[in-house]
Length: 424
Image (cartoon, rainbow, N blue to C red; front, side):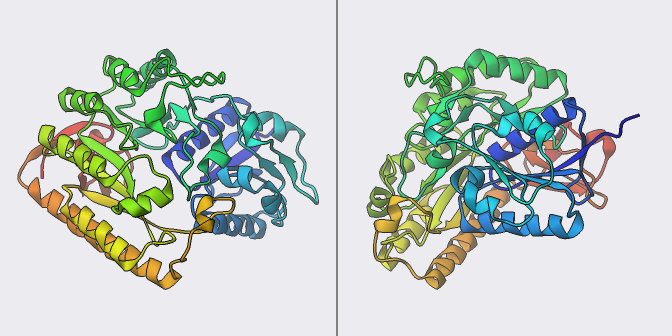
């Protein structure tokens, strides 16, 4: 009997990458591969990369070196955003055998049939302008929550961002397809779906190059609310200018869409927002938060923010800090600005010193900690619904309330993947 080839995966970056990695794993398993943990020995290692920050690039190189020490004869495949942006740079890393760009990652099974360990890496990539198809993806068997990709690419051109260069134009699935995927996931026992995309609120642009919105994100939200079996949906991240009143109002009245939004801000200074080429001002952001909190006082709101952007003075940063301090939000994801090749931000001066960027990051992370502590304390004594995850972590299990408060308790097998009434 022929021995099955084994494959192991490692994902860097966002929830979108996790959904795509899971889909690649299912494709290879259907083709006869056996999935292994990344720490184990495998015939093939696949690294799905991110390139939002410099650290993601470094981590990719570090992982390849680890594989080389552990399994020098194994094949190493690199895909994802870093692979699309800098394929030649990756191909020069000793030990890399195959680099798959954005158009080729979902053809991985075919590539692996033809790949042998060689002296130089094979690059299968194309110009990002030629990438137009949409590949539906969702994570499965990895966790209780399933990340489902419904949109890809971005037509915005923020001055700090390489994502349009790495993922191409905005394109998406259609409502009917997404509903079918959600229905199938419900039959597999999935309780919660997290909707993911690069620019989720731009849902509705077809993969056939049609730039008109035949459907929109609100249409998708309404349709998913009707799917039997799925108990919870979360919106992973949505731009403030695309988060409409009707979406907020629908979530407020829905039993399935959780009271939890993640809304990128990036800066609380209108001057810096302009330099970043963001499509809103801080006043609109404050209006979004106020409407959410008026309709759902218990709602969790997460915020992305970048510190140390070129031209950000102490006064600009203080404006951001004070603005975030004043907002009724729950937590922050703080990113230290890092220079990305071929972005407009490289032309902006003065450059903020690295040590100043790190100080500002620390300051906002402290603010985030205080915000989350305050938000959690507000709900002490309340009974809320918690969906517990399957994993047993040293005798403990974790889950999240509808409004994204983390709960940890001694492991009980009967609670895994169940929604439990829980007094906080």
